[in-house]
Amino acid sequence: MINMAGSRWKAVLKENLIFYAAGFVVLSCLKLFYSRAGSDELRWILAPTARWAGSLGGIPFAYEAQRGYVNHELRFIIAASCSGVQFMLVSMAALIYGCIHRMKTGKKKTIWLAGSMVFSYLFTVFVNGIRIVSAIYLPLRLEGVLAGGGWLTAQRLHTLIGIVVYFMALLLVYQAADFMAGIVAGEVRRQRRRIKWAVPVFWYFAIVLGIPFLNGARGKNRDGFGEYAALVTTVIVGIILLLWLASLVRNGRTGCGSADAGTGRGEELP
Image 1 (spheres, helix red, strand yellow):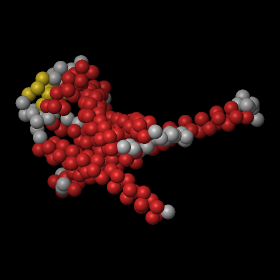
Image 2 (cartoon, helix red, strand yellow):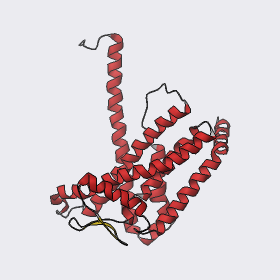
Image 3 (tube, one colour):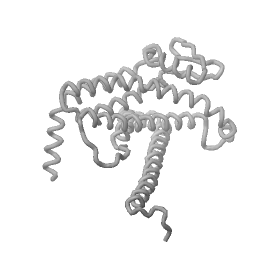
Image 4 (cartoon, one colour):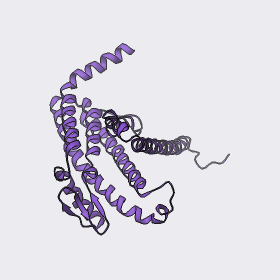
């Protein structure tokens, strides 16, 4: 059994190696570029994000060189660190490495590779705009809580909003991509669909926490990185548990309904 599984994965790797390598090169180059870029170099993603967030929230942003898109009234800046490039990389990695091996031909694999990159860019702009508007308005709703001097500070709330919005969006887009990949590949699904979280979780942790850790982020800012890693882990585990419990409740109700319908005694009391 183990040998068969190993042989299968070797065949998959051999068949898709060039596409995996291409994805790795693109992701690595983008990551390197992002690590050195400022707001001026990132206007290709900051500009549409600022326009979308401005339209969505009714908030005007003006560009200031070397700073980003600013709203002075709200004292909010869409800077390089708010560009969403990290999320775009996570989305690309999940879509490419999670689905491309299911494409049957080289042409379909090439289209999926290119499509994953273009879609991840557009999806990042969309999701980041929602995150930014949430990060502006939610603290205003929670001013009393934030002013109470407790654990939940404005900075922690900002971080929590980012984790929740980005991870939920990643889960959603991966489920859609998995479904689309099945259609393109001509796969027939006979079982009930379940949320697939392993691939999104792996790439989220790998890019958001793993790469910074390997680059020495923990040593440079041990307390800050440790707290951020704990927040990411707690939120993601919490989301997965909530979704799992929701699926249990849904499946339980569906199972009862199916059993009742099958016996024709759904209304009968014991």
